[in-house]
Image (cartoon, rainbow, N blue to C red):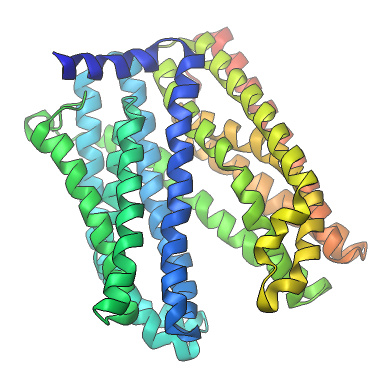
Length: 460
């Protein structure tokens, strides 16, 4: 009875007061984001003791690994959105079937991905200029990519938990992964003397332990709201399409941000040199810390928006969107004030050894760029709302316009054409982001008003 009550309370959270749902769903996701940062940091800290080639190897594998994580997040977003809509429509059989379809997609994509990466990884590393770190990068990458299913399954399974409002256990999974990775890294790397391969195995094993916990909850103990028994599976093209309709654009959005980083770095080198790239990279990593609450709010909104859309409660959909935006702007203001006034202290994180000279520039960058958090708030939350209602392509277009078009365009105008140097790049990112954020917010409001007026879902 207690387990059944817990399952139902999660669903009641999704279908009840949207304000309570947004707040309760958001904070575990914020904790998860911090844990992911700790997870990634652990590898870098322990591997750094193996020398520069080993640390560089991690640097070359990380962008490829983030594409893998982005793929898992994309399938997870599509699954979360579709299940939440079916729960909102009280169509539990299709919600169960959607979850099972997502696991089938996970298996297929993971197997294909592992095979493809096995053959193309050496070529990719050569094209990326890995040089003397190629052997170390291959040793690490071949292990990690061989077990691609662990990382994609973990993302999709936790998305299934979030789709039914069970965000706390989704957070526990991330905690398990991070803690075991931090513990196992020094054991495998140094005590067992496995070097960089030890770091890879620590990452794989920590992920495997989390997967075992998820499998136990979902398939052995069976204490989730959704029933994932095979008898509930019957293949439907519409469900596969429904997941991929959000998953593919969501994954593509991650590629947009990778491309944005490459282009911004190119412009910074063009106007100021590599030191500007180092300053920008370090400063933006710190500013990204202030964006973690927004990512939590965005994930919560995706789930609540999906449930509201599925229930055809378009007023609640609009109200939950506006409430999340107001909450995001309020938190953004707090973060902006803290980062602006404490920029010198925050930048001291990088004030050691050869990086000490970067600290003043990083502090100045933070004070200019922290206002960018408002643009992210409007753009990110609008995109997540569209993902929640299944409009993945719209989310992708908004992100493309905001990040890859407007931010790069204004950075080029201010930094290169107007000759403002690296400061022009900073102001360009802020200006383009703001215009894109306002455009996204306006588009979202227009969509929601039409939805309520017509009382029918709009086609993309």
